[in-house]
Length: 115
Image (cartoon, rainbow, N blue to C red; front, side, top):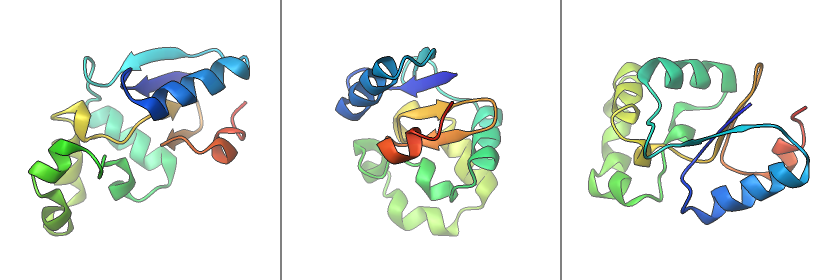
């Protein structure tokens, strides 16, 4: 299982602590140092069943400074995925990637469904 996070993020810290308390085995990946690629993001998006907008860190400074709230609706999925792949700080976190599941953001009730 891969835990994609930003170490300074309090939600990521909370999620990591929860994973450890549950005795889950996982690899930590710093989203700022090791940005997800286009192919990874496309795979995660398809596996997650979520709307693509859920993969954007809408409360982030970069998202706001780029005025993406207004630009995203006019962009294709391909363009949005390529944009996400340019900077890990645009991507919502944490992301938990398992063999058959991808969870975005930390919601304990959702995370309880992982094996």
